[in-house]
Amino acid sequence: MLNCKQTTDLISHSLEHTLTLRQQLGLKLHLLMCHLCRNYAHQLRFLHRIAPSLNAHIEAQHEQTLSATAKAKIRAKIKDHPH
Amino acid sequence: MPTLTDPNLWPDLYGDALYRHALFRLRDPMAAEEMVQETFLAALQGRDRFAGNSAEKTWLIGILKHKIIDHLRKTIRERPHNEASQPFDEMEESCFDDSGHWQIKVGRWSNPDNALDNEQFWRTLNDCVSRLPPRMATLFILREIDGLESEAICQEMALSSTNNLWTMLSRMRLRLRQCLELNWFGDGAK
Image (cartoon, rainbow over all chains, first blue to last red; front, side, top):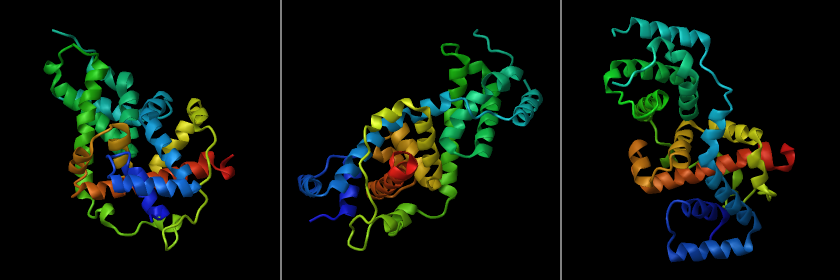
């Protein structure tokens, strides 16, 4: 019988590769009986599904900017560059 | 011959966009600045190769992506130990008892999709990624953002086996979930 820790590993692994039949059965059985791991499974799948949109959201927030000092430094480097 | 804008204007035109891209991936302001600078200098060097079939900004982002990959490879190889091979993980220790059962409350998140329209939620998730140990943050980027396959990630991160990778991914997801529970979805977060 799987414990919760082994179950959380299998939940994560199931996002990476197809589990063996034995693993699938063990996972199903544990989830039937453990509502904490059921919550965990939903939450991990949720995170895995939404994560790819994170960079678009963060980069669109325009909160971080290159400092004026850094820009000036880079401008000077560009000027010095032989072109 | 496609024409480029005056390179002296690049920092003002594209500096912020490139910086945000680099900062998202590296989580290190100094390194991100350095990558932007290196990108502009490399672009200057390779100006003749700008084909003009993409926008100038897209071309610069393409160069930046390569610079970031080189930087990640370098830092990964410089870090001495391999977190995946460590038998104990402090987060795991605190979440499970000796018999491997939960000793924390794994609450139900009601309608998590409602959070997706809230920009503050994305900021919280982003902060949670920043709080991961550096190797796990890199893993998050390569796996969840770039969607790289296991073999490719093992190669980039110098991991000896996919089993190590899967262990690390599981630990990384445990931390992220916990961070969001504490800072967004949990009863204490509201």
